[in-house]
Image 1 (tube, rainbow, N blue to C red):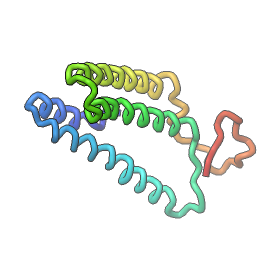
Image 2 (cartoon, rainbow, N blue to C red):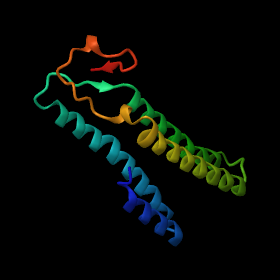
Image 3 (cartoon, rainbow, N blue to C red):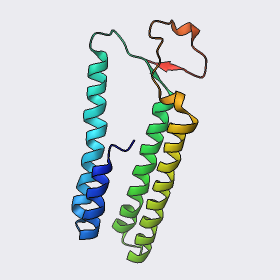
Length: 142
C-alpha cells in the first residue's frame, strides 16, 4: 500500500518548487503504468499454464470504485476551469476540498483493506475446490 512513497515525495517537492506539469505527468504515468502494465502483466502471467482464472468480485469492485472517485475528484476542478464561469479562487477551494476528501477516502480504504475486510483481498488457497462449494457472497468471475 505504500509502494508509491517515492512518487509522493517527488510530487510534494515538485509542488513546492512550482513544477505542476511534472506533477500532472507523474500522476498520468502512474495511473497508466498501474492500469495497463501491471494489470496486463498480471493477467498474462496468471494465465500461463492455466485454462481459466478466477477472481473474487468484491475486492476489485472496491478498487474500481476508488479509482472512479479519484478520477471524478481530479476532473472536477479541470471542468470548472475550462468552463470559464468559475473564479480562480473558487476553483482552488474546490481543488483543496477534493484533495482532503481523496485523502480521507484513501485512509478509509486502507482501514477497510488492512483491518476490517482483510479476507476480501487475500488469495484463496483452495484452487482445486469446485465452485459449487463456494459461499454465495464470494461470487466468482472467469
